[in-house]
Length: 435
Image (cartoon, rainbow, N blue to C red; front, side):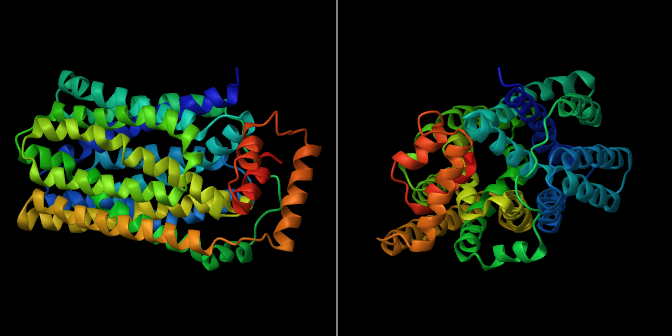
């Protein structure tokens, strides 16, 4: 039994369990304080806004000082302290301040946890999805049970007791986590600046922003839309439990088969499915049916996340992996979050929730066209002959693999990248991952 892998599964389980208390029920908690939809949208997305600045910084620091465990611990401590300020104070201004701090620290730990999960999975010959699916399991369990526990404790005013209690488990498990330190030299600001000259990476982040604005809008305002249609608080918990539960088979299985397709083609299909999903959300007014439609999370968000994380691994140099994953989260959680929350809340207040989702369908459709078009463009530009320099890199990395004891028979990642004809870029990434 690999203790590191099981520790990471427990950390994903317990960390995402804490988010299961906030995502379904925090908007209802704020509504009970008398805030409007646009105010709640701002509260739910102000945290993602600060991640625009926070996540690249934490990613850079983890790459610079080659430690993930210490930074994750510090971020989680500050998350709990910020939540105390949020739940123990009153007034919209203070709620805005402490919500900002809460998400500043909490969401900055997501790409770092993903990075240590990816590195440990590569070393153990496991898939990233086999670790990440435990986060969905934790979210599902808490989203289902939190509604009943809150009812037994007297309602939304007891939300903080549940939230603080769950944080005990991730702190205990973090003690047993082996820190995944970098194997190369510490990166410099000059190396960091090279990411901003990586045109394929920057274009990919722009496409992710367009695709994810309506998704983040749904994250912050779906529960309020359900409540407007007559749903109960328990239905809100069930809706998010269905969404997280549906992710589990996707995280468990997609990693085994996604190597057969290019990531941009898969994301283009995901964008088409997102378009259909948001159209259905706008047309349907029955809260029970909308609650069941949250199960389409398995075909949309789960597929998006595992494919995007893997694609960033290919686009970004190995020594900048934490920074690259942080920039992906910055766009998804930060830029797309603040745009989705503010614009979506305004549309909901002015014209209603259905128009909010019709706008989302339009953006998803645009993203589908751009993703599939980019995939077609890259296929036409694919070089037919390996350059002399790149050939030397492949040979050098292959020798490193053999010297470190990784043969093509013993390593599933070597098999994947050397025998399935992925092309030069993936051969380099796959070989470097096991060297």
